[in-house]
Image (cartoon, rainbow, N blue to C red; front, side, top):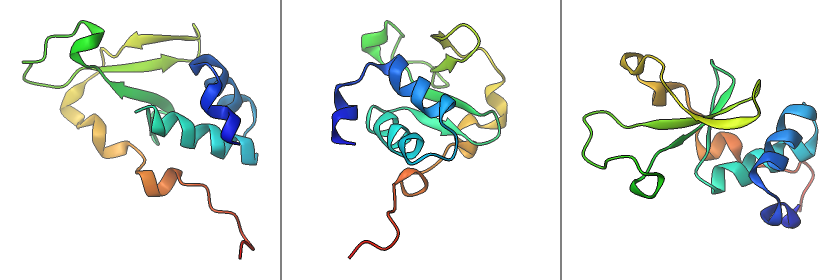
Length: 104
C-alpha cells in the first residue's frame, strides 16, 4: 500500500469508488486524507479546503472548498450551502485509519 503515495489523485479516487469494501479502498482513503482530502459521510463526496495557492483569496468569511465530482471526474469548486456546516459530516483521521485485524 505504500506505493499509493505515487499515484495520481484521479487514480486514488478510482480505487476508492470502484472497490467498495476492499482493503485497497481503505488505503486509498487514507492516502487521500494525507493529501488533505476529507470524505463527507452524508454527501458521499471528497472535499479539500481551498488555499491561497489555489487562487482563492485567503481573507474570506467562510472557507472555500473543492470537491471531487464523480460524474465529470474532476475537482470542482463547491457551490453548495455552507450554512449547514460542511465540516460536521467529514470523517476524522481516526475514521479513515486502516486497522488490520489480527496484527501483532
